[in-house]
Length: 54
Image (tube, rainbow, N blue to C red; front, side, top):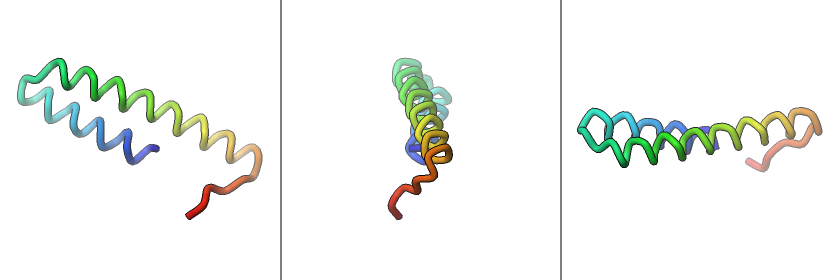
């Protein structure tokens, strides 16, 4: 999840530099959502002691 968030963040930065504000805003929103979901899942797995499959 975090790697996808970083990917969308990079897309947002590139789109912002090139002037595509709509795409940049959407990519930023997607990156933020994926980051929060990944962080919540990481906390849940840390508390419960489960490890995600490799």
